[in-house]
Image (cartoon, rainbow, N blue to C red; front, side, top):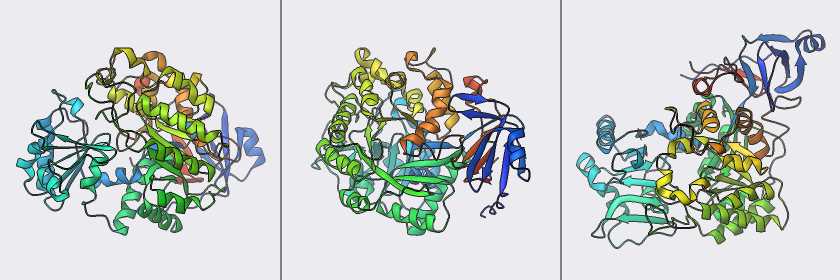
Length: 535
């Protein structure tokens, strides 16, 4: 049953009683006046009350009032799709994972068996699972289970058969079909090879697609987000977003980045990017250069330390990315380039530098993830004006096995956040949900400590690269707003900005990182209207 619509706000409101979180940290003794979805004024309560004597007073019992958080990198459809999939996140062994699959299959006996979240690096042997492991459980029912990072799939023999994948099937461009000692596909598909099976999964109806998008956005709003950069949407999803926007059915603001589909992007980029902030806007194009470090698909400058036979993958030919990223910039839109390995990050910077020589666009280009970067290249982010779009929880999820992938000589390239900041780069935070938990307070603690919730590793992973709390919150608010070209509209408590606001009971400037992880959204305003939060 849908929640009832909130009542319209008063013409004028004054929010008072909480510490305000500004770009420079907490500020006490002041309030905020709102009018028609915008911040009218920020200042002492007495001054606001004198200027607007008939304003409705909203008393907040202490805590912190901050700009609504902006999710800088998520996959909204994937987040909403979790309802239809078996959740394999965080499971510590293959037998436990197979047990979870067995339970889900029994409870959901029809159609393809879909799932997400397994991570072989958590298992004792740290070896990829096999199709044979699934066959005894699933028989002729096809199975498609995405790895936690979304860059590998574990499928059964039935799914391989549906896709016609056999010993003679060549690797597609930008992907790998892993095989056993006899040359037979073993059930693991990396990056572009996943599409060979994925294209056979029945697609959603338009209504199901809209429901999935709304579910993903609702889950983000429940975490305290008032806007999201949706990284990688296809033509059907764009159409669904436009239908929802026309019906005023979007619960938070959406900045959509199209998939790197040449025809789709050419069609969309013919339209001028809207100057006025709205609840839905096409923001740019999402490009993939390489894969992920966990599945050894991230493209490295030198071979993997724990698999010397590979340097990873180019998911897309860099020449194609260079051409279309330049087209995107010239059209006034924003290229967002997935680059995880040090070779991919260097290539992304090189092609963006070449494009920027022909003239800067209306929006700064972005590199998504920027996980393994040489010191020389980390400095180039700020020099070129390239946004470092970072997901802090990737560091604290991956710290256990990153040293094995890289080896000691280049470990210092991993997650160089302080180097980015010191070099003047704009930092924009996100979660990569559903790859990671969208909870922003867990991510803020990760940025500050570079430790997982259990306190590992002791002292933090490469602790010299930690960020301060002020820097981390700025990256989730003003940093993301600036990265989206909306520095005056969003992410800040200043006159004229939209009244997208989050209140939490905790004094954010005082609590420990451990307490920070446990903070929950208390009250949320989107466009000046308070919206219900689950409790």
